[in-house]
Amino acid sequence: MVCATESTILDPEDIVLVTGAGGFIGPSVIAQLHRHGAGKIRCLVRSSNARVRDAIQGMGDGVEMMTGNLLSREDCAAATAGAKVIVHLAAGRGEKSYADAYLNSVVSTRNLLEAAAQQASLKRFVNVSSFTVYTNSGKPTPDVLDERCAIETQPHLRGTAYDYAKVKQEEIVREYADRLGLHVVMVRPGHVFGPGNEAITARVGISTFGIFLHLGGPNPIPLTYVDNCADAIALAALRPGADGETFNVVDDDLPTSREFLRLYKKNVRRFRSLYLPHALSYALCWMWERYCAWSERQLPPMFNRKRWRNQWKKTSYSNEKLKTRLGWSPQVSMAEACQRYFKACRQEGSVA
Image (cartoon, rainbow, N blue to C red):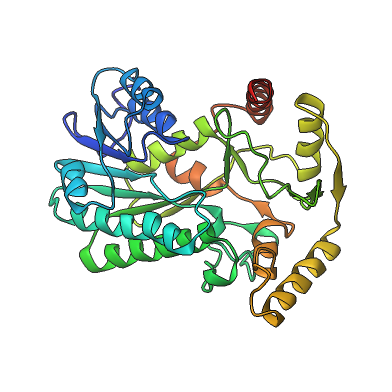
């Protein structure tokens, strides 16, 4: 438990609700909330399978698990009852359908917000979003992405259901905050990696046509190790003075895409890859976009200029606001985080 003098908005008996507690980030967020002084944590999960149950029950006293679905208004009312802080991790992931992504990220969030608004003593609602919401164009500081940068206004043209749903999720959170006076904090992590999420981020490249297309090249990759990200989320939930703010989460010492891919091949497994320079990858995205329009979307719009700007345009990333306003710093160095990640990748490969 953290020192009792650490500043927090919680009283000793206050309940913190964590949605999506059984997901990749959930257990780490629970552990960090405990470390920063949260004594009562309610964990909402969709299903209490053995892995999730064991992970949450092992968190110690003061942690309770509740099974429910955010698409149920009754479950939302039960989960939010008495909660003083809500950390909203749950979101639709992996859905290829825009309708499914919208249902599991936007409708579920609306239900949670409406239930939360009934709690007169609610102190804060933390929505965990993503870097995918940024346009990454027309930035106030050229080449640097920070919290001042513009949000995508046409997410349906990005070509991925997840990106679309995350933008719409943020929109509804801000709408309810303005209309109902909720105290909201927005947290936008980069790519969260670590044991349990072994896939190479698409910001490095994509496997297609039997080869790995390396698209990132010299770009820094906006990585945040799962424990470091969870610590940032916990601080955003508990520290005074964060209401109404947005915080980007990326670690220090970010590797470039080229460095990360080289380390992955050295430490995990070797495979064929083909580097596409930025001008060529941009041109291919433009041609894909044009053909998609010409064919009346017979070819899915997976590659387009909006996605290129968000994921593959050369960009630097800032975590200065997170450090200065919340006192955050990475607990796990990038070198150590990569070694833990590569070890998990090797183990996952040996199991497969």
